[in-house]
Image 1: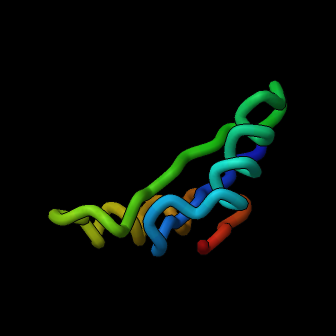
Image 2: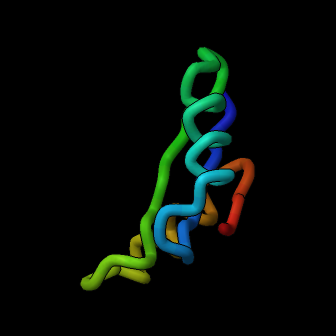
Length: 59
């Protein structure tokens, strides 16, 4: 299963939300979202997730 990580850097990006929703419906893709717009982001954990992902999308 392919892992896709989405990093959200903008609050409420409609294009990102639409794409994440569409990818989440696909059975052969694992989608994870990290919202960097919220306080208290664990950047160390984000770096680990980046290297675990097959694909990275930054919005």
